[in-house]
Length: 284
Image (cartoon, rainbow, N blue to C red; front, side, top):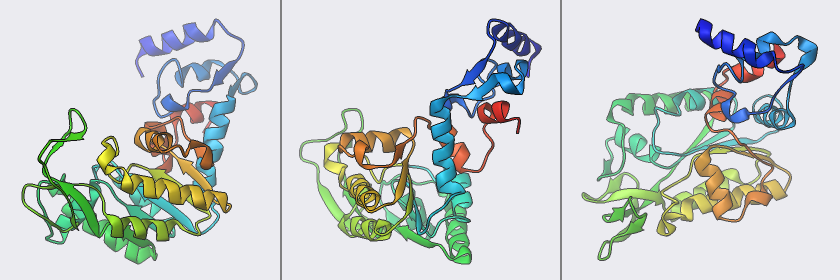
């Protein structure tokens, strides 16, 4: 921590008698104006705000006060950005659904054909390690068996180019020139089945390129299954910008238990890290 940052925090603190930390979205950063400033208030004059309390309680509900079965859904494009979270969850969940672009790194790790699908070739061993850890911990690992693929997605406009093809194929047999862009029908059904009956649910990351209306089915299936489980008594936590965008796009925001306002902060909390913005208040 630079001396200038400490001085800045001290100056900010001099303007107030109490400090309330209510910015969960920045709680994973040790910034002068969010975490360091708390050092200049005694324990009776610094506290978490109402939003922060809700966020901390929501994370606690899915990581510490677990009601089982506990199902986590991790989507998105890269295994590398989620590996710490995945490894932590494999010590807690009963079922783990891995979807989105990560599907093709796992398929490639088993010598699958993935066409032009997104893949992390330097993380194939990591994917195999995740499978082994899930098996060791007795966690049911659910991966997409099929996918929707296209040879003409325009990522600038999020539309399929005229004359292009959209096909359904096994996730490990994507034809050359095609890329997997959504979970296929069989995968959607497997995701629904895995979520049904859950009592604690965590969702972070979509099942496909949901921004394009042609490829919303996988993410919608997950969202609707979560909503159904929530209606039956499950606690569901939705976090991360894309997952939040999904539930909003599909009109499911009022059918889940809690939607987190944090992206990076939520991910680090799920990974088991102590958030500086929380620690500064609680003295951890």
